[in-house]
Image (cartoon, rainbow, N blue to C red; front, side):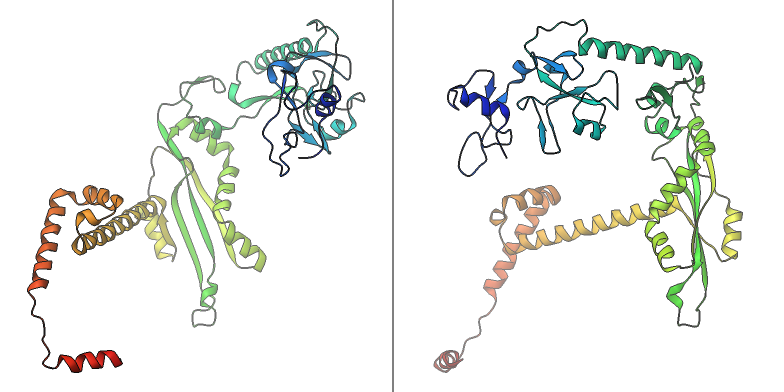
Length: 400
């Protein structure tokens, strides 16, 4: 909340108030302490969209346009570029980055060739307007897209091609990882044929080696280690084998970047402290399912290398996670049964009653209720120790 916008400065000068104002403006709720309705985040009055979008504006180079082609939601260099300040912006159809007619702040911004517009009373005509120029610009881009596709003999993917506004031409950077994320199937325009219906994944091994610094100061100081995690999957789910094979041939750097992200902490400390620690990605291949070389695993084990298969590690994690959940559930059930033995079912909170019906069932609840009643009856039947000298006990209790 700051100064009033130009619209708010203009309307009171013409005799309008917050209670009496034109029907094409409105005032949003005020958040100021003095309860002034005009002290809001809009700077006072605000145009209705149905009104301002139908008004005519003129760009710095003289093109007429409708308010619906402009933007009014930017704050930059202390200026609110809004309709209310007569400083709305639009996109330049000529994409002139060094245009000397637009506002100097917008030239420094270099954001999609923005151009400021001002409201005008001139009658709007489509011929020679900003909308007509944008239509011609869009048609030109579409024609260049068709030409680019013909130059590539149709080997282009609609999802992986884009128009470079800086160089003013179409480009396509083929990435099989995008095909995998979109789960592409059927005919691939880049390959010019149908994708392989057989699905698989990209597998790789991770080798970490170095010196064990945790043994420094012991008899085993200087001992080295070497661990290999085999069968790591790159994609979360199976994709066409064609995509896997292309990915292996062209995108090995992406696998290395992913692995470095997983071991970022170890890499940082190794580089910062100069430790002997090495990370390698090897045996990158495309397979329908994980293959294991048992003889190679045995040979690696004899050579002192710790071999771990990623699928086994994940399976172990799932089992341990399931066991932890079951153990936690057993503890919750045990606590709930203890509550039922200590108090009546009706005495439990509503959420505990719902849990008891869900976890225990009516038969178990009835059984615990019988045990609770039996326990209470046994407590009532227990003998009470009588004292032959109650006066002495009362006096001792008083002094203690």
